[in-house]
Amino acid sequence: MPLLSVLDTLNWFLLLEKSQVYLYGGLAKAAQDEETKHALLQFQDTESEHVDTLTTAIERMGGSPSKISLGAGFLSGLGLVKALSMLERWDVQTAPIISYKSAAAFERRAIKDYHALLDRVEHGDLRDILWRHLIEEDLHALWLARKVDEMQYPSSH
Image: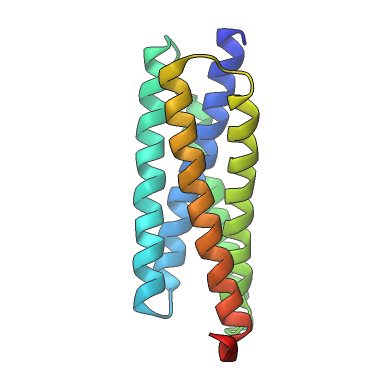
């Protein structure tokens, strides 16, 4: 895969990861219980580590982190949190479910994109980074799906 294409894709990941940092921070502030708050803060920390790792990888490959991704990550994550907080004012019961489903959709998109890049990258160190990020995104998606299930069907848990 050409270096420029890899750098463009890594900058796309950087945008997604920055969005998730802001998303999980906002969701943690709105969390209704201690477990959820701690899980979301842990997810935020993990996504922040992903941002740092991707930034370093881009720089080591001779690229520079996209300036667009710096602001866009904040705006897309913040925009989703703001939209979800408006929804929460209307419906306290379903807003968290929609919020966690939206966060899980972010995770599934990241997983899909990480798989696609892994299919095209041969570099060992970069592959290790991509696999680690993919697995962590998958764990987040699984936790979020379980949380949604618990909220929708509380008597079965």
